[in-house]
Length: 501
Image (cartoon, rainbow, N blue to C red):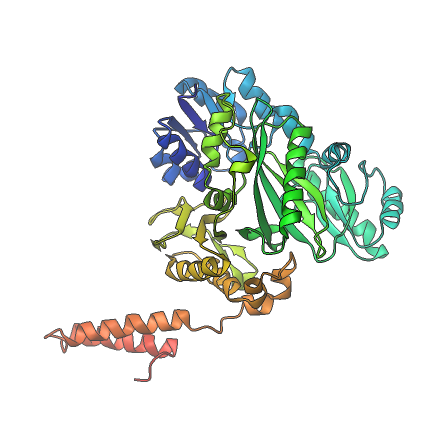
């Protein structure tokens, strides 16, 4: 039985895993780089060990360092979280070779689903629908041009080893085939060390919908329903929700069964996500399988009532699933917003820096998975996500209203964030109606990046008014020091345009 887990990760996902471990009475070991000495996951763990300089290729991606800590601490198992080494078959194999438990799928399953061309072939064999396209990687420019013409424009050129939008290009015209091909190859080589690419037919008005699956080592596989992930920017998810406002129930049931078959096809174990692309007529096609825990897993937990990390650990312990498919239902509606240290008004440039103040939202149906605190400096070296705000409501309308309220309460100073941008999404008609697809941000960009609302101005006015009320009650207000302070606040009000004094 697992009694101590090393979490080979950082940030909010490391903290989230540790919380479930603590509830199960399992000790946790954190690893951290120079940049993360003061991070929350270091403080929260039972033990924490330094593994190197800030760059991830000198710390979080160095398998030998992580294995040394695991041996030193007597850890029974390693949880990879997501990102870093989570979908590295060599790491999974090394963990098990050293006699530890890898809390995740087998190295073979990771390899099969990690190569997109191999995954397509496997799904075709399993009877799961796939997007029309190539069944092998493209070897030459001429072969690529011929294949694109056979599939029919528009197409997506994708990296075989890809993920996260890297090595991906859309082609609408013949003259763009070769430039897009070369750009995709170059980006794939840099990101994954593998420039193999393939072609898929581009689905118009696409929705990105994924199904959460769980599989044990006793042959049991279930799905925990879908997540709608179509609010994306540059193929990166921004907002997710469940249930999907698009899917009919008959399509939902059919997709769930195909997700289960996809997992069975690779003898899957643990938690995984089968991703589909869905057109406006609700025809759907296999996209890829993420062989790890997803960033957006909390919304599934909220509507289905299952702790996915605990289930991962129980499966790794060899226990059979305690849920049957017919036991699982969707209750209410959940939405997740990803809070990034980015500046939406400057092309979403990362905004690392010192957190001077943070007030996280609270109240009924509100969950925040984060890792920053006041006085923490967000590093340059990693993904700029600060936290995930997860909201539950009795229905979709209730959830959207609660998310608006929670985002309004969320205050972070010291760095630029995407909070106001997310507020605008919750106010956008296309989102409210549930009629959006993966072009949502592109189609509503002007509205989403406008600064026409007066929230910040109103907050400034409230602060100024409260300050004037305070100083009006101070007997010595006429002292030189307070007159100077009063004049400074008057000037601040004039600059903000919120007072006429």
